[in-house]
Length: 320
Ligand SMILES: Cc1cc2nc3c(=O)[nH]c(=O)nc-3n(C[C@H](O)[C@H](O)[C@H](O)COP(=O)(O)OP(=O)(O)OC[C@H]3O[C@@H](n4cnc5c(N)ncnc54)[C@H](O)[C@@H]3O)c2cc1C
Image 1: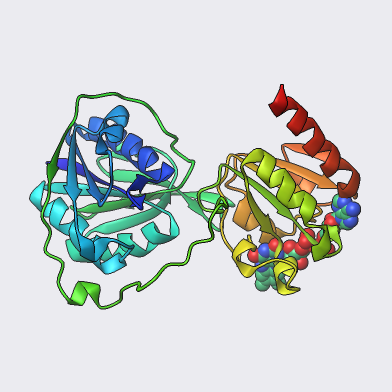
Image 2: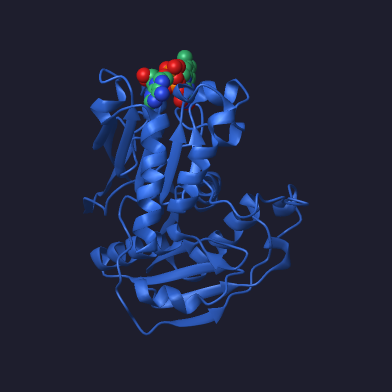
């Protein structure tokens, strides 16, 4: 019996969540006294995973899976689970992970828990703690099926080093035409920008910035910090920023280490999407803005004065 982790990668490079799910898998394998096996698809340098406890890595090389394909990935994970006699499969809870995991669960007749934030509370019964109600509550969920699929929420369990002298081996998968019924022909990436999903730091701004012409300082702050830019819903609705930057309940979820909110009031629908972020810094002229109640750090001040000063200080700090 083993625990199987799927470590996702893009263009051969592991995503940060890959190291988190492997760290999580190591913990679950210890709890179950099982072996940990990690599956990778078209990833380079799988030895990086040994640092996080991956004793055995199965490497799939497949031109058919050169871009993300939910059914194809799910089929590969199912085949690996069967080949390794794994009855616990662990994936991330990214947008791709939330797409793949239910397909794996159906294929393995497994129970599935998404957005899991901690190591299992118990293994018999198998109970995990998950985010619920748009991150406003936690649910303890028991998976009672023999096979189990666990989706780990980003930045929840953390990345833990646990070095082992692992081994890797090629794993051949059969991907059928049906698995490839939907295929990405071309992906146009926004180059040179950190995406919200991958970002450790997100600099986000709202209607308090008055107009799109004022976003220069937001972009500059993001550049100094190596951060992604984001915005509130009205800002993207007004066409000041692209919809891909809209975060919140109806936009993208953000689980960054630092979320900087500039001129955003902190409406409940906005907070629902960002409250999984670890540290929140709010800059707002209105001391009564609801965002201050959710903030770890707050600056009551005019963004047009505070942000340029912050950029100046950060640049000076970096230069020294
Ligand atoms: C069904 C539904 C779903 C929704 N989903 C989302 C969602 O996913 N994401 C989302 O963001 N919203 C969502 N909303 C909208 C949400 O309710 C709020 O209307 C929205 O978040 C407000 O955006 P805002 O904070 O940018 O603007 P405002 O509410 O106008 O707030 C602007 C803030 O800027 C401050 N400010 C003004 N000038 C300055 C200055 N010079 N310096 C610093 N601060 C300043 C003000 O004090 C104020 O707090 C949704 C609403 C509904 C009904």
